[in-house]
Amino acid sequence: MVHVIAGRYELAEVLGRGGMGAVWRARDRTLGREVAVKEVSLPRGLDDAQVARMYARTFREARSAARLDHPGIVTVHDVVEEEGRPWIVMQLVRADALDKVIAREGLGATLYAAAEGRPPYDRPDVWGVMAAVLSDDPDPVEHAGPLSPVLQGLLRKAPDRRMSPGEAERLLRQVAQGPAPVPEPPRFAPPDPGSRNVTLHP
Image (cartoon, rainbow, N blue to C red):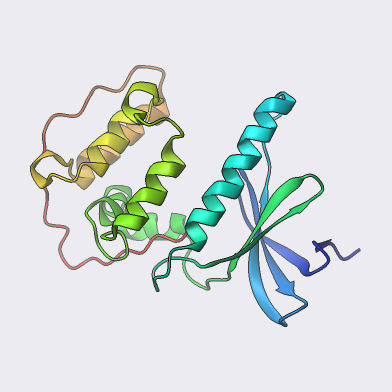
Protein backbone atom coordinates (compact mmCIF):
# COMPACT_ATOMS: atom_id res chain seq x y z
CA MET A 1 0.00 0.00 0.00
CA VAL A 2 1.37 3.42 -0.97
CA HIS A 3 1.69 5.78 1.99
CA VAL A 4 1.03 9.42 1.04
CA ILE A 5 1.68 12.25 3.51
CA ALA A 6 -0.59 15.31 3.44
CA GLY A 7 -2.08 14.08 0.16
CA ARG A 8 1.12 15.01 -1.64
CA TYR A 9 4.32 13.25 -0.54
CA GLU A 10 4.50 9.58 -1.56
CA LEU A 11 6.87 7.62 0.68
CA ALA A 12 9.20 5.21 -1.14
CA GLU A 13 11.94 3.86 1.17
CA VAL A 14 13.63 4.57 4.48
CA LEU A 15 17.02 6.23 4.03
CA GLY A 16 17.97 6.17 7.69
CA ARG A 17 16.68 5.95 11.25
CA GLY A 18 17.70 7.76 14.41
CA GLY A 19 16.58 8.56 17.91
CA MET A 20 13.94 11.04 16.72
CA GLY A 21 12.48 9.13 13.81
CA ALA A 22 13.25 8.14 10.24
CA VAL A 23 14.05 9.89 6.97
CA TRP A 24 12.27 8.65 3.84
CA ARG A 25 12.97 9.09 0.17
CA ALA A 26 9.68 10.33 -1.24
CA ARG A 27 8.08 11.78 -4.35
CA ASP A 28 6.35 15.13 -4.39
CA ARG A 29 3.25 14.40 -6.48
CA THR A 30 2.50 18.08 -7.03
CA LEU A 31 5.90 19.12 -8.40
CA GLY A 32 7.01 15.72 -9.66
CA ARG A 33 10.35 15.67 -7.84
CA GLU A 34 12.10 13.51 -5.26
CA VAL A 35 12.39 14.83 -1.72
CA ALA A 36 13.45 13.62 1.71
CA VAL A 37 10.72 13.42 4.35
CA LYS A 38 11.55 13.17 8.03
CA GLU A 39 9.07 11.19 10.10
CA VAL A 40 9.24 12.47 13.67
CA SER A 41 8.83 9.82 16.36
CA LEU A 42 8.94 10.43 20.10
CA PRO A 43 9.89 8.06 22.95
CA ARG A 44 7.10 6.13 24.59
CA GLY A 45 5.83 7.17 27.99
CA LEU A 46 5.48 10.89 27.35
CA ASP A 47 2.28 12.57 28.53
CA ASP A 48 0.14 14.69 26.23
CA ALA A 49 1.72 17.95 27.38
CA GLN A 50 5.24 16.65 26.72
CA VAL A 51 4.25 15.41 23.27
CA ALA A 52 2.66 18.75 22.43
CA ARG A 53 5.82 20.62 23.51
CA MET A 54 8.10 18.35 21.46
CA TYR A 55 5.96 18.66 18.34
CA ALA A 56 5.74 22.44 18.75
CA ARG A 57 9.52 22.56 19.02
CA THR A 58 9.84 20.50 15.84
CA PHE A 59 7.64 22.96 13.92
CA ARG A 60 9.62 25.88 15.33
CA GLU A 61 12.98 24.40 14.37
CA ALA A 62 11.74 23.52 10.88
CA ARG A 63 10.59 27.10 10.34
CA SER A 64 13.97 28.41 11.53
CA ALA A 65 15.88 26.02 9.28
CA ALA A 66 13.69 26.95 6.31
CA ARG A 67 15.02 30.52 6.51
CA LEU A 68 18.58 29.39 5.83
CA ASP A 69 19.89 29.47 2.27
CA HIS A 70 23.33 28.00 1.61
CA PRO A 71 24.71 25.27 -0.70
CA GLY A 72 26.04 23.42 2.34
CA ILE A 73 22.70 23.27 4.16
CA VAL A 74 19.83 20.98 3.25
CA THR A 75 16.83 23.07 2.21
CA VAL A 76 13.60 22.64 4.16
CA HIS A 77 10.69 22.75 1.70
CA ASP A 78 7.70 22.16 3.94
CA VAL A 79 6.47 20.92 7.30
CA VAL A 80 3.08 19.19 7.43
CA GLU A 81 0.98 17.36 9.98
CA GLU A 82 -0.15 13.79 9.37
CA GLU A 83 -1.40 11.20 11.83
CA GLY A 84 -1.18 13.83 14.56
CA ARG A 85 2.54 14.51 14.21
CA PRO A 86 4.86 16.68 12.13
CA TRP A 87 6.64 15.53 8.98
CA ILE A 88 9.50 17.66 7.63
CA VAL A 89 9.95 17.79 3.85
CA MET A 90 13.51 18.54 2.77
CA GLN A 91 15.82 18.60 -0.20
CA LEU A 92 17.00 15.09 -1.10
CA VAL A 93 20.80 15.12 -0.94
CA ARG A 94 22.74 12.36 -2.64
CA ALA A 95 25.92 12.26 -0.57
CA ASP A 96 27.82 10.14 1.90
CA ALA A 97 26.03 9.42 5.14
CA LEU A 98 27.41 11.10 8.24
CA ASP A 99 28.72 7.81 9.64
CA LYS A 100 30.78 7.31 6.48
CA VAL A 101 32.18 10.84 6.73
CA ILE A 102 33.13 10.19 10.35
CA ALA A 103 34.75 6.88 9.41
CA ARG A 104 36.77 8.60 6.69
CA GLU A 105 37.68 11.87 8.44
CA GLY A 106 37.44 10.93 12.11
CA LEU A 107 34.80 12.01 14.60
CA GLY A 108 36.85 14.83 16.06
CA ALA A 109 37.72 16.37 12.69
CA THR A 110 34.11 16.11 11.51
CA LEU A 111 32.79 17.92 14.58
CA TYR A 112 35.57 20.47 14.44
CA ALA A 113 34.71 21.33 10.84
CA ALA A 114 31.35 22.59 12.08
CA ALA A 115 32.54 24.21 15.29
CA GLU A 116 35.54 25.88 13.67
CA GLY A 117 33.25 27.98 11.52
CA ARG A 118 33.81 26.58 8.04
CA PRO A 119 31.09 27.53 5.53
CA PRO A 120 28.18 27.42 6.12
CA TYR A 121 28.82 27.39 9.87
CA ASP A 122 30.48 30.81 9.78
CA ARG A 123 27.10 32.53 9.49
CA PRO A 124 25.36 33.99 12.57
CA ASP A 125 21.94 32.70 11.54
CA VAL A 126 23.27 29.14 11.39
CA TRP A 127 24.62 29.46 14.92
CA GLY A 128 21.23 30.74 16.03
CA VAL A 129 19.47 27.66 14.68
CA MET A 130 22.08 25.40 16.27
CA ALA A 131 21.52 27.08 19.64
CA ALA A 132 17.76 26.62 19.33
CA VAL A 133 18.19 22.94 18.52
CA LEU A 134 20.56 22.33 21.41
CA SER A 135 18.33 23.77 24.11
CA ASP A 136 15.09 25.62 24.75
CA ASP A 137 16.67 27.24 27.78
CA PRO A 138 18.29 30.67 27.48
CA ASP A 139 21.38 29.31 29.23
CA PRO A 140 22.12 25.74 28.08
CA VAL A 141 25.19 25.59 30.32
CA GLU A 142 23.07 25.32 33.47
CA HIS A 143 20.51 22.86 32.15
CA ALA A 144 22.44 20.66 29.73
CA GLY A 145 22.95 16.91 29.88
CA PRO A 146 26.15 14.83 29.86
CA LEU A 147 27.20 16.20 26.46
CA SER A 148 27.34 19.73 27.83
CA PRO A 149 31.14 19.90 28.24
CA VAL A 150 31.69 18.60 24.71
CA LEU A 151 29.21 21.02 23.17
CA GLN A 152 30.58 23.93 25.17
CA GLY A 153 34.13 23.10 24.16
CA LEU A 154 33.28 22.77 20.49
CA LEU A 155 31.02 25.80 20.25
CA ARG A 156 33.33 28.28 21.95
CA LYS A 157 33.99 31.06 19.51
CA ALA A 158 37.30 32.15 21.06
CA PRO A 159 39.96 30.06 19.27
CA ASP A 160 42.20 29.78 22.31
CA ARG A 161 39.36 28.21 24.32
CA ARG A 162 38.07 25.77 21.69
CA MET A 163 38.96 22.09 22.11
CA SER A 164 40.82 20.11 19.48
CA PRO A 165 39.30 17.32 17.35
CA GLY A 166 41.20 14.71 19.35
CA GLU A 167 39.99 16.04 22.67
CA ALA A 168 36.40 16.23 21.42
CA GLU A 169 36.55 12.61 20.34
CA ARG A 170 38.06 11.52 23.65
CA LEU A 171 35.34 13.25 25.65
CA LEU A 172 32.57 11.89 23.41
CA ARG A 173 33.86 8.35 23.89
CA GLN A 174 33.98 8.94 27.63
CA VAL A 175 30.33 10.06 27.56
CA ALA A 176 29.37 6.98 25.53
CA GLN A 177 31.02 4.66 28.05
CA GLY A 178 29.30 6.40 31.02
CA PRO A 179 28.08 6.69 33.67
CA ALA A 180 31.06 8.65 35.03
CA PRO A 181 30.60 12.44 34.66
CA VAL A 182 32.57 14.16 31.96
CA PRO A 183 34.99 16.80 33.26
CA GLU A 184 34.84 20.38 32.08
CA PRO A 185 37.42 20.65 29.26
CA PRO A 186 40.37 22.97 29.89
CA ARG A 187 41.40 25.64 27.42
CA PHE A 188 42.70 24.31 24.15
CA ALA A 189 44.55 25.92 21.29
CA PRO A 190 42.87 25.38 17.91
CA PRO A 191 44.58 22.65 15.87
CA ASP A 192 45.36 22.77 12.20
CA PRO A 193 42.86 20.37 10.58
CA GLY A 194 44.84 20.60 7.34
CA SER A 195 43.09 20.52 4.00
CA ARG A 196 40.17 18.35 5.10
CA ASN A 197 36.79 19.61 3.97
CA VAL A 198 33.80 18.17 5.78
CA THR A 199 30.16 19.09 5.23
CA LEU A 200 27.46 18.02 7.69
CA HIS A 201 24.01 17.25 6.34
CA PRO A 202 21.01 17.08 8.77
